[in-house]
Length: 348
Image 1 (tube, helix red, strand yellow):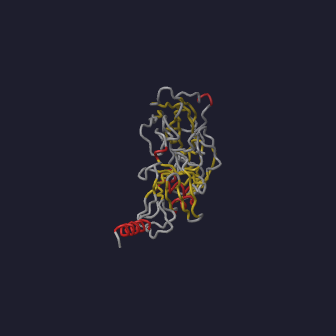
Image 2 (cartoon, helix red, strand yellow; image 1 turned 120 degrees about the vertical axis):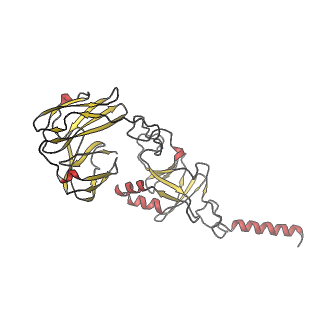
Image 3 (cartoon, helix red, strand yellow; image 1 turned 90 degrees about the vertical axis):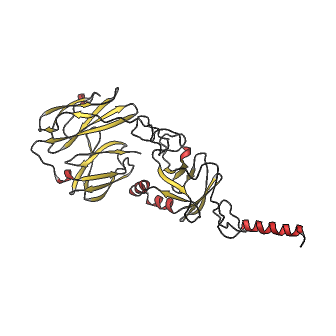
């Protein structure tokens, strides 16, 4: 064999060796004439880095012109598979709980079972139920009609405070960006906490910020309309058979804060539900809340900020699903009918 023929044969063998490393159609360097997957590349793009945080969101844009809601998105990171195979999505524990509790079990299953590659401006998304679909990069992320939402890397979000309770809240900011948030600091409601039915009491909220206005609400009695003038003082007649809460919402132009004081009638004792503990998640919520309750079975009530009763529910020890889908968005108080209430925020 002459030298030229030897070099040609060696180059051909080397080329065949390179081609024989990725026969996976999902990979960016797929070659149908190759064999094996040892050399497959599943991430080859300049749009974002595999090392950055990623998020999944539903098509609910909340006024964000870029179509990415930010604060309302779920932490879902795109990562290398342990076996060197296709990329996969890792859903955070908090995101998994909220998806499952709000009825998006199928979305959670889809996200955690998909096999993925990102090649240039295309995400190859292999669904176990629908097969492979190709998603196009839209400048910020990839729209996925299969699950009614989008996938976006953290670098696509603008900077800003993503905490919806902050005065400088930026709805489109990265969900992971909570630095520099300007939050109202809670003050104190000054007044008698041990009360007598039929007696008039005056309460003052101290520690508010300059320029704030105030709205008081309670199930402990009727707050006269003239007492809702925006100042930090309220007077009303206590009229409730057991413990209840007087709450005040401090309002700034772009944020608010709720502070409550428990009022206890003299010569009464707490019912078992009052001594118990509970958690409500997710909060804020869209459709369904899950109440994890440790106490005796009891009737719970939900009030709006004006003190109107909006809903009743019978809560038992353990997990309780509460459907709030028909309630308008806003802030509510929810808890045992004869006990303290917790703040609950409902969003669209």
